Length: 285
Ligand code: NAP
View 1 (spheres, rainbow, N blue to C red):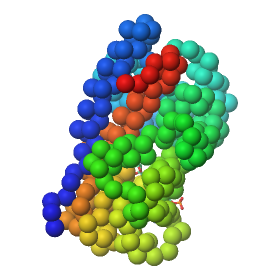
View 2 (tube, protein in one colour):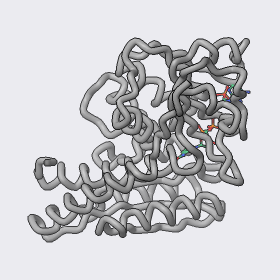
View 3 (cartoon, rainbow, N blue to C red):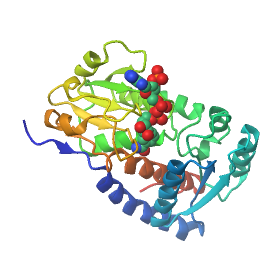
View 4 (cartoon, rainbow, N blue to C red):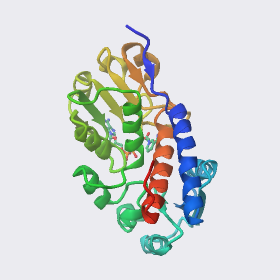
């Protein structure tokens, strides 16, 4: 077996940031406007606060303007929707992110669906999903887009390959499965009711783990030479795949941390830049 390729999301995100910084500069020069990503965070979840801080820092690194809106834990669905509507109408805002998850009493999907699809740079609105699924012009769910960008950059063959996605969440499992299908993979989506999961995973040329359980996918489940994409991010920087033992069997893998995570942020800010370019009629170079 050859040494597996490390799908280095951290390095790729860094080089994409350089390109984005130049595009932000061009928007500034042509329009006098700085692209702006508005981030709404509801409640006091420490992990969410960290993710939002990382996203705001990434905006600043490329010269973009972050706008952070903190809403109290007891905000209602209507409160959040009103805030989103104000951002939809604000011409200075080019992208809107509602940090997932929101407190349980809030109807997250109703909030996502109130985001104007022209500003839905995190790709969470159901209309955005539908357009992406139908291969129409649309933003895309940020983590799945990051995964696909990483696979493409490292020239991982997708067409005709068996891809097994474990997880079917609206922000990760479902959209990544659809994107793999759109790239002509043969896709199986697994979830908590899937029977004989290890046997299904054994068929996979590409495994995408999006479960939210540390080291859930075992080395014995994976086929020799497969590509391992670990979207999981559990406390202690632990992914959803037992990478320590599975690396020896695979041909390529995303490390945790430094694989999928940086690519999620990169996709979010890239789509915000694209949104601003579209608004001002500036063609991407
Ligand atoms: P989620 O909404 O909790 O979804 C988890 C999925 O896993 C569900 O579809 C669930 O199936 C499935 N599942 C749970 N137990 C299973 C089992 N025993 N066998 C098979 N499937 C099982 O999670 P998520 O938001 O998609 O996130 C998944 C992971 O990705 C988490 O670790 C999260 O932290 C990480 N994440 C990372 C990033 C990043 O940027 N790196 C971004 C987002 C999320 P059911 O549908 O049947 O319940």
